Image (tube, rainbow, N blue to C red; front, side, top):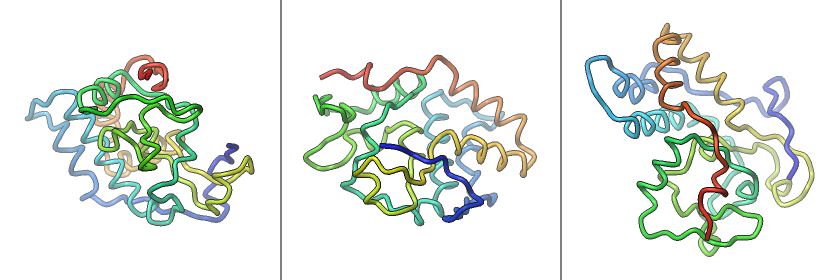
Amino acid sequence: MNYKDYDESKPPYVEFTNDEESLYPILEAFSPNREYDALYKLNAIYRWSENIMNDASSQAVCKSGCFHCCAQKVAIKPIELENIRANIGGFQARDNGRFCPLLDMDKGACGVYKARPLACRSMLTFDDPKYCKSNETHYTFDITQLSPVMKQILDSHDLGDYLARNIDMVMSGEEVDLRDEFQP
């Protein structure tokens, strides 16, 4: 699959939620008055990213049952690996050929959907879904575009220094490929 970098100057233009309410999960998890473990903070980052991307997701052509993006490498942080392992339940990694070993191909869905990493949560496409099935280049949005959006939002609420530093601490460590960590 070939992807064009998402360019907001070209259609489709995507809006991201930047209201104070969307920040609640992250503000609560990283409050200096509270002590939460890293997995709790990671899940707050996930909830915040979903709040940010709510409007964008509604404009995406991504639908349940489509899993063409699951054929690409998924770089995850150590804390995300720990989160998946803690939440995998009875799901077994599968030999899905070129697709992610955590994909349930019978259902056309992620076998660890609630624990899926940020790279998967932020992957969207905005043009025709027919491009997902082919090698035609199309417009996507992914983690490389989400990170600057998150920083902009924090900065716009004068939270950039404090929260960005704390998020970086949770998301620290060398990235690994999810496929290497879950073998059938």
